[in-house]
Image (cartoon, rainbow, N blue to C red; front, side):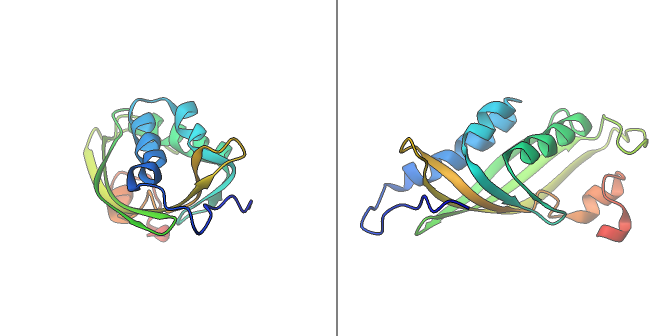
Length: 155
């Protein structure tokens, strides 16, 4: 993990710190995963319940989610900045119209809430990017288990 942190005497505006998180979510909602990945530092780590991912893995994860839930949308309900961290409460929604693990779609809508904790800093070009994320996209495991996305043993 690179140490591309904001200098301790540098106090960027809240908007500057929250921008990469908002832009990541907006890009996922627009089905523009390359733009979402551009908001991540090249060596960032996305920590989740199931595994940790580098940017390439984040793209695979969201491609999988969009295949199962083509109308996937995230809504930021609340954001707080604490130092170089942006904490967001996010609600995800989608309709299970894609198959997964050879299970047919249920055509049922699902919704879940998760918390994203993003550490934000500057990359080599000086752009503010997400360095590290702790986001459990599977936060409400029962919702995912109901449609067969997560085996019950993982809930």
